[in-house]
Image (cartoon, rainbow, N blue to C red; front, side, top):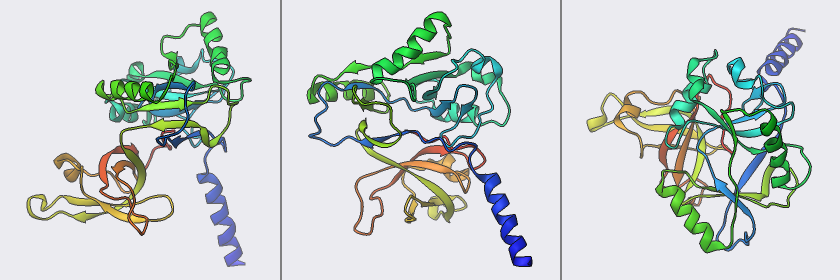
Length: 284
């Protein structure tokens, strides 16, 4: 009886810890050279915090409600939206700090909501986005906009656009098949285009620093999807080493391919993607 009671207690706690909704969102697939994307739509991949509007609540990717001020959501449409909470290029950490606070903060005045999808609307991408465009004509919102889409003529055009975005401090591009209906999960009709590969891992612990880093963190001990674990020391600033990402944090790192045992090669820390006490603020 005691073991049964413990099991029931464990199941109850598990249910409490589950996300508020099981909503599955669109996830991007990596663009590979040689893919035929002529005529596809391309847009800048904003380095913001993913946010899903379900018609009444603003949620993180895993369905956890964000502590957002009432003014930010009171005139959002009664239909679903998917987009990025964003301040400006290069200010991801400030964006994350604001939106991950437990209570609505005046700093939300700096945040804008950039929409790239109207989930479950009919038609191709432009038709779906037009639903929001028509709504904003009647109910204009200064803090809400649709991410501009342009037609990709060919690979040269794609690379020119990518170079321009990166030179301006952007992260990369998103390519979308304009005729594809709305879908969820990892999609071959939605691609991310970057000059480097990146990935996310969960911080499990640290390796102490040596030499000039004595008394600081030498490397982060991280785990990626699939359970592979390894250290990341490259890319950490002196401040990162003095005040490293907390255990449980989700961090983004760049890398160059994989070793024979599946470990990312030349992994270099980039930024904290998610605080351990926050909801999941993953990128698409």
